[in-house]
Amino acid sequence: MARATGGWALAKRAAAWLFFALVLVLVVRQARTIDWSEVLDSLRAIPLQALLAAAALAAGSHLLYSTFDLLGRRMTGHRLGSAVVMRVTFISYAFNLNLGALVGGVAFRYRLYSRLGLDNLTITRVLGFSMLTNWLGYLVLAGAVFCFFPMQLPPDWKMDGEGLRILGAVLLAAGVAYLGLCAIARQHTWQIRGHELDTPSLRMAWLQLAMSMLNWSLIGGVIWLLLQRQLPYPEVLAVMLVAAVAGVITHVPGGLGVLEAVFLALLGHRLPQGTLLGALLAYRALYYLLPLLIAAMAYVATELRARRLRDGRLSASR
Image (cartoon, rainbow, N blue to C red; front, top):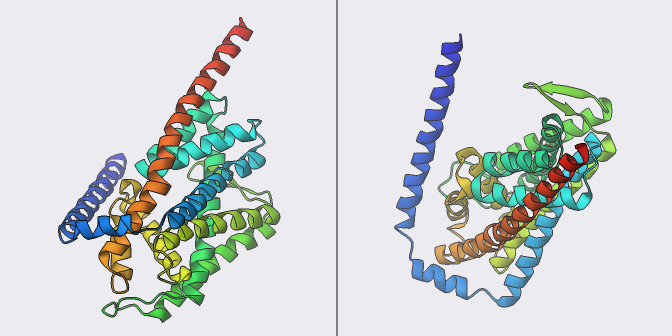
């Protein structure tokens, strides 16, 4: 049985790497067909006002996401200060965006929180609740957008607006089911693959939903502003939501190339390639790279603070 389990794990890992290689080949092949001088011209043509507005929305999104772990603090009752929790969440999120969930969202949280005195069970519960908050808002927002604002798909695609509405209804149903579970099974603890997950109160669930939906909406707003509002906001938001899931499925760090491929596939018949890629390059700079630089400095400061706390505990115990 152990050998079969090991063989299955190896097969899944090989399939993941094969899929990653296929995506990489497709991205490289697509990159060779792009007129990069046109992309740079489009990037330079974005007005300063649009860049500043997009930067403000990006900062708002990162600030809002940094509060997600405060909900986990409320659920677990740990005593780290709000500023400390938000700093850890921001660092983890910035590294998650650029290096992937396992390195950023998971590894950084475990390292930083454990150095700040939290045990692994508490960290796991905080992390799980934060991830749940993020994807709950995604389900409901994507469901609403696909149901009520279906995007104009390329003419050669087999799926039409009706197919998107059905998908949206399924996503909405999943979100509503979670809210119903919170109303019925309040403060219930579930065992999922050996980890505990608490069902929050309905009030907390509504707060999760509102915070996450606003965060995803802000991210869509960043790209919409950088595209200089040439397309309806719901349509840009819908494409961004599709790209977000595509990036998670492919396991490409930062969704590099995946985000661009999705936008080109779904909006390439509406806007020139150069316009789309120029806006997406600006988006990566504002939402991924600049926060990463800030997070790297904050990480060093947090490590130093954690070391001082540890040295203080050692001194007190002597």
